[in-house]
Length: 145
Image (cartoon, rainbow, N blue to C red; front, side, top):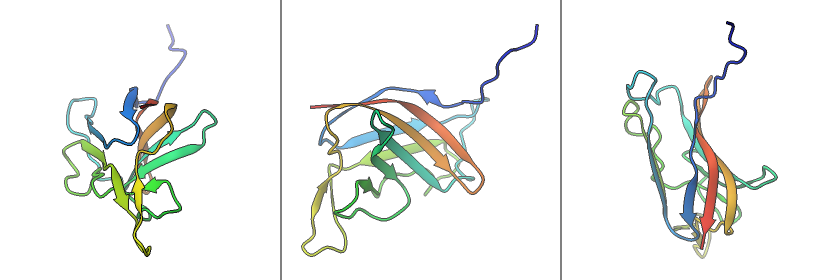
């Protein structure tokens, strides 16, 4: 009998709950189908996008782009490590501290990183490189009081 469908989606659907205004920590160990550690060698950007019901991004955590400013909700915490130190261990760590001081402002402003309204959102965690994009995880992102 012939197969009538094929899926190339290898991402994992995982729901996440986080507390509003708290620090956020997520560590994911990624393996290949044969159980070996995933290599980040072909990727240079990792992003964790949180979107509302209309698909509009309400928060992005990324290892690239501009550092935090007072006018953006894109946060570049110093400890998102998709490939910076070890490209072969398959471990991706996202740590979002409680707050970040803005750069280039006088006075320096403090920005609360997890200032997302209480509710349920969608998220996607993905890696991109010069010729690759891999969605690692996706699902619901619930923010509680």
